[in-house]
Length: 280
Image (cartoon, rainbow, N blue to C red; front, side):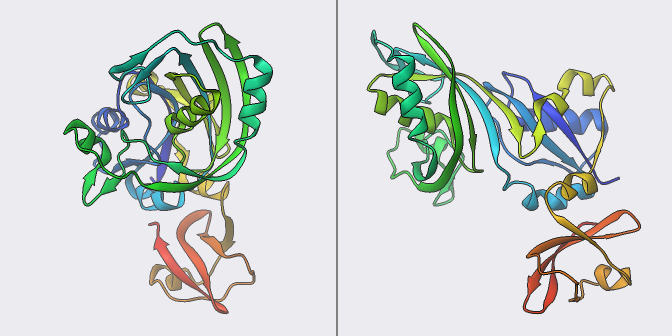
């Protein structure tokens, strides 16, 4: 069966750890996920199994929503609470009005400097590997978009915000940039991914429940249908052979379905459609 699980990743383990545990419990070799969460982060993690792993590239471009709590007064080398403290001082937290106004200024398309603690590769090596070696390297810059951001809570030494962002946005880096504009030091204390596209944390199973056999499988066709227009096509042999086909639509990318089963992703190429990836 081509399926996925929606997991509410617990704090304290890596995304790789989640996949490792599920691989053993569910006795499967093919497993993958659509977006890494830091060990100290929790929340929505879509895990793919068997032939559904072939669809990974079509599920990693979704928008994501996070709730982030930022602790004021300490700065760490990883931009989150798990790092080594590199600065600590008393800071006066700005008012609710100041923070609310500043957060709204981040909405829109912008450039973001990738944090040194990320897994982005430069010359074949991940950035966090350079950091561990104490080497300085020019950090890459990404195009991102902040769709929405709002202040949820504020107290004497922390504030919490919710944000909806484009894929590839680093929330630790966003918090870093917010702190710089507020002219205070701080670090991410808690981070929860509350939504991936339209999949909410309320739909997710806890990892311990999955291990205990209490979980819901999500069919890949249902997941893909939430994101792409579907076309029922016959003869299906053309799709199985990866042939170029004609479709009665102008939509750029579609999923091909037959007898309520998902077969492939096709993309417009002139007046025809070509196979981008078979999903069987």
